[in-house]
Length: 376
Image 1 (cartoon, helix red, strand yellow):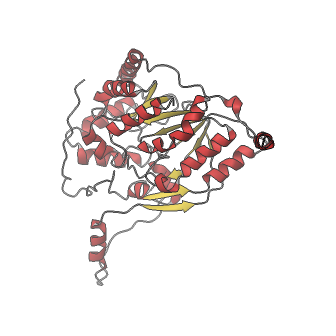
Image 2 (cartoon, helix red, strand yellow):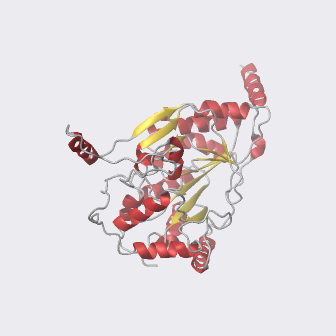
Image 3 (cartoon, helix red, strand yellow):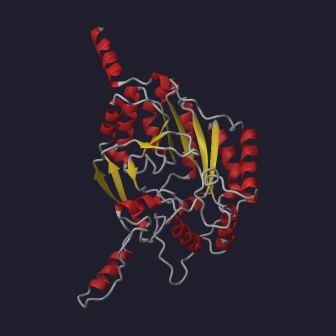
């Protein structure tokens, strides 16, 4: 199917500015805000100073946090794991469509620009995970790393929180899957590959488009499409089961590429695939619609009309069973396209079964370490 060409556009008069390397320039107020702010001139030149400061590219700030817990439970019937770990809150990748943006509201921060410039790093994640695995009543369950915000975003290069979490999983022989759109995961192949050989690890790489121009405006600080394909090749070459996530599918933007993305991922070494249609919960909805009008004014109305067609006439639906896939004729046709392409390419196999039986409790891990020490 023919891809729709992407052309750079200038912001319309009165629209929020476009910030290079950022998904949005809008510091959208969150839904819990009780204050409204308006810039005014106090006669001391502060208005001119504020305007000058707004013209500067916003820097990323990483704020360290000591968390009380690191494991989040999941009881959603349409998600294929029981527990999740997100080493960071917020994500510098700046993906405009990210369904995790509204979580910044709980921190009294904007789901817009703050989400991608104010990153919360859970620096004691490994310690809390070790404590959780050591609890007497803990039983191993399917665990995913990076389900909300990318565990390999730029801050991970320095902080290595995700790596420390994987080290704890290895120590306890606890299986995990991870999902990322970053090539940073290649750094940890030395840890992940031996666990994958024991059915303790699997990886998924998110590829939304093969068009670098579209990727630059839709997910500005994520790895390029070609770089993500290279990451699939390197993970697969290391013996790590790797799947591809073609998510989210956005009508008339990346939707025409669906089959080509699956083919490219298969050629790179992916063995499974899944796909989710775009979701617009809470503050994601106005952020996405503003971005759409700025970058694609020629088709913004058509994109939103098709999204509403898949959501029963609304901008979003949170109902289990259809929030990931949509409903209606067009959503059904989209699912058919995905399933037919996946079957043709051999990507329709079940996800890798991870082995929960190898989990070592703290007592068992200590006994194994003691037995190994007695050999010397």
